[in-house]
Image (cartoon, rainbow, N blue to C red; front, side):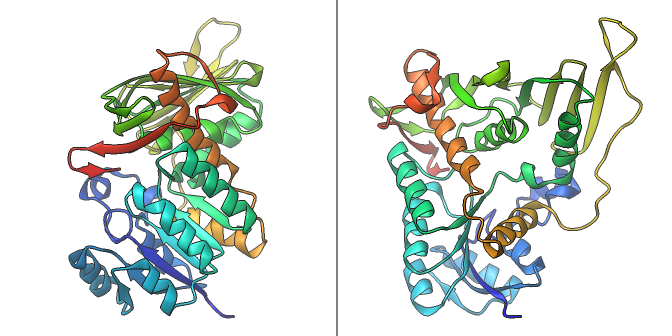
Length: 353
């Protein structure tokens, strides 16, 4: 069987070399984390070429992974290779044009890091061209693909804990574009089946270049997502990398970035929930991380299921909705009424998200 021909554009932290901090503290389920490592684990995929404007990163990745075809310009890569699947791990501001170029050159599947783009205008264009060209898309918000988060979702969906009332994400005081695509996607993942109606937020570190254009990468002080049937998703600035799923009859907590699941349940009519002795950990020993996302992407590509990506566009829309809410003094913003003028460059120091 002919292998799927892939390419990686961006050979930095996520493209080729996971950070030392993630290697030290990240639970096993997060690995392989880099795009190249993940693609190399897939037996039906060949990594044809890699690309980066940084010659040192490109050289290091080429030598480490034994990839001979290297480029400092993605247009040249596409001109010289017929690529089926492209993996994009650049800074955000380059992604819009790379996605366009990939689709124009016949790529049918794209795995892209978060966030997706810098403006509502770009978001609408990407959503159109992806749909119009029947492109399969996956995204760098990986938790929805990891076994332990899927276990927690199965517990919620089982009905044992009663109706899901609130989803709380505690990722510390973190940046909108750098961290909170993950927070938003977690909420969308666990709220599957509920309609998102509105968002609201309070931000700090907001530097404007014009009325609706943010240069900085704002910090979320507090943000909420409101769904039908009374479900609320909240993003706090409490540290810990925990996700708390509050239900009518109990609480499910995914602790320490997916290290384990704790549960509390009602007990004999008591008004207090009691901790269960059953600590749940991830016993799966196979590859997960970015591998899981791309594995899912390939399944969608093989099944021609190019519509299984709406969560990506909705998640990016929510980020812009948070900005719109903050710029309107914390006003509740309906999800379909977010200003088309919103843009975020996501600058931190001299770097962009």
